[in-house]
Structure formats: structure tokens, C-alpha cells
Image 1 (cartoon, rainbow over the protein chains, first blue to last red):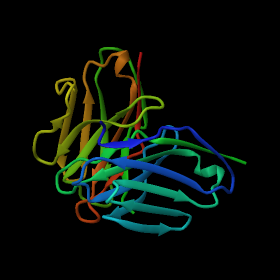
Image 2 (image 1 turned 120 degrees about the vertical axis):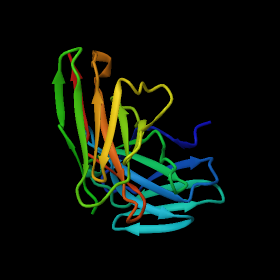
Image 3 (image 1 turned 45 degrees about the vertical axis):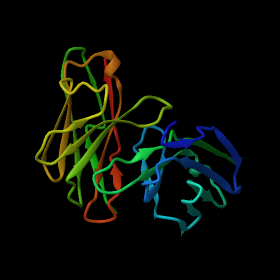
Image 4 (image 1 turned 135 degrees about the vertical axis):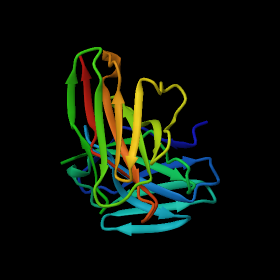
Amino acid sequence: QKEVEQDPGPLSVPEGAIVSLNCTYSNSAFQYFMWYRQYSRKGPELLMYTYSSGNKEDGRFTAQVDKSSKYISLFIRDSQPSDSATYLCAGFSGGYNKLIFGAGTRLAVHP
Amino acid sequence: GAVVSQHPSWVICKSGTSVKIECRSLDFQATTMFWYRQFPKQSLMLMATSNEGSKATYEQGVEKDKFLINHASLTLSTLTVTSAHPEDSSFYICSARNTGGTDTQYFGPGTRLTVL
């Protein structure tokens, strides 16, 4: 079992839709959770960073962490074609440990 | 925000030659940097963890003599692909951990290596 599981998609939605991207994880030591966005042939870009359980909102993006069920989510409101990218979730237990990435979900938002 | 640069952004080389890729943290100090490899439509694969002033830690299956890593300063790590072969063609991405901020990783834009 991978430490972080993520459905690779692809996920195709119409412009303006609410997108829900999800990951599950197995490592109880994870304290920090990140979402990265990666456009084709580019490096990943940090979108959201959360510590422990709870919600965090930034513009059209909301990150949600439920440590009791080991479930992390990213919601994108009013999706735009420019949101078309691969979204990677990651967990981190802090200190000198490594970020553990999910496989990434490919999202396509069509006009 | 934290910015990480990579140079070159793309490189084409002949089989058997060595290629050096630089990774720099531009506005923060990074005691730890990471090197990833990514094949088309696949996720990131961690190759090694680079610690300033000490030897890199390589992931299982990664040849340390082929992928030489040097982290001589708090803002620069280099990856040298020695005696490159066509199967080394890939997208190499570095990241740097901002331990002075949120202790998270920021990625460079990547380097596309093509070995002929």
C-alpha cells in the first residue's frame, strides 16, 4: 500500500464547475499536507499548505484535512480552463523526513 | 514567495557525455534540497536528498556514481549525470526546503534532458 493514494484521473469538467480532488494516506505521523499544481513540462507549484486537521481557503481554492479518516481534499470553485493541470497531494511528518507525494490527478477544464 | 531556479532548462547531449544541472534557491537558504525525476505523464520520483556540507542520501535503486550530487552552499545544489545514455533522458526537477519559513518544499522549473 502506498503511503499516499491519489486517483490519477483524468478528470474532465466544464468551465465553472466545482472540482473536488482527493487523497488518502496511511502514515499517522503526517502533520503537514500540501497541494501542488503542475502544468505540462513545468515544475510543481505550491498551491496550499495546511497543518493538521481543518480547512484553509485561498481565493477559489479550499484545502481540507480530516486526520481522523486520513483524508485530504482540494476544492476548486468556478473552475477555469487555466486550472487544467496535474494536481499533486503530499504529506509530511516534519523534521528531516521526506515529502510523500500522491500519483497526481490530471484535471481538464473545458470551455 | 520562495523561488527556486534551475539551469539549464533544457539540454541535449551525446551519449557518453556528462551533464551538470544547477539548482538555486534565490531568496532563502536551503540546508536540504531534493532531486526528482519525472517521466511523461508519471508522478515525481525522488532520486536523492542533498544536504548542505554532507553527502547526499540516495533512494533505493538510484546509482550514486551515475548521479553525482553536490550541495556546497546553502543556496546551490548540483546534479551531474555522468556518462549519460538515452535511457537517462527525462525531466529532472529539484526542490528546496525553506526551513526558515513554513518548512515546506519549493520546486524549480525543471530541466529536460535529452541524450542522443
